[in-house]
Length: 316
Ligand code: NAD
Ligand code: UGA
Image (cartoon, rainbow, N blue to C red; front, top):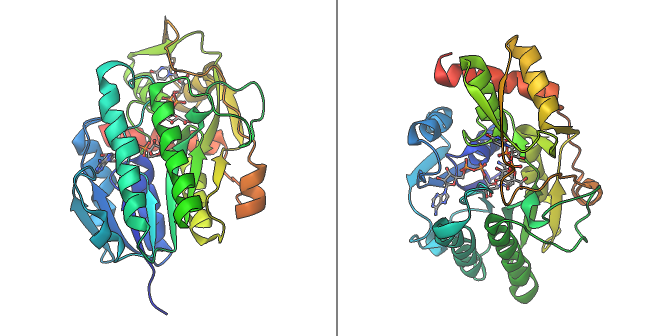
């Protein structure tokens, strides 16, 4: 049987690199694109790519999707996993917004435009729980979106473009609304990564607000599995909540990090940040029913693995 070929945009990032490794294990050939955006250190992204670059079925191109022509590229693949974006909720205000628009909206539109005339089986787009804004309980995809950060606005626009190209031109695309993903390779600007590093090195931990904000934390392997399920599903034009099995607040997360590292956290309370929802809570029944999505990994498991990865990354 012919080997399936996937394009992974943002392949040097947290989710893109983990997904690329899984695709190779599943027998895909993978073409990966990344521009090493400045959102965090290039050497961290190079570490993410290390195993991939040794794999004979992985081809990497350092390219900026804002200026790349998608048509030739997608003619060579069966499926696209579009993970590239400028992420981060709290940094999307002010003059940075232009970059969010370029990377998150315009690039997605260029991909969809090229996909109109292609033979792609599927495009799986990374969306975000931030399209909802705050949540008071389990939230279904039918809930009207109310983003409260400029980043959330760009992810919603990208998602709506996907639905538009699916309905108007039959582009086979689905969007996955990830809920705060954690585990090895989590971005250095995200809470678990910062907290683990600071606890291990005795640095103060900055908590935005009172630490009582909660998240539906999703382990990286579950988010990766959702991508494979979505790629293989016949359904298109849909959006899916991809949440995990652990909802906790930050104070609970910190206690868990303390107990697994055997070190005390030095907490420093700062004001709550604009754009941050107080709580997130995924209702994942649609992904369960349509895709067979069934998250497996709890926070204890994921935190242990992430602590080991952070220690190894920084030689702590
Ligand atoms: P990341 O920053 O680690 O990875 C994104 C990668 O895309 C980066 O390596 C970056 O260099 C690359 N990239 C961005 N724009 C590019 C461009 N124009 N050309 C080429 N490369 C480009 O982020 P992540 O946490 O892995 O997020 C992946 C996707 O998932 C994003 O779309 C993000 O919005 C979404 N998401 C992430 C989370 C999470 O918890 N990590 C939650 C919800 C949604
Ligand atoms: C994460 C990703 O970073 C976004 O890209 C993504 O879109 C979003 O999930 C999502 O689910 O859609 P966030 O939930 O803010 O965003 O994830 P973290 O950066 O890990 O923050 C989690 C919580 O910890 C937030 O309440 C944040 O304010 C808090 N935090 C973070 C701190 O208190 N201190 C820090 O140093 C960092």
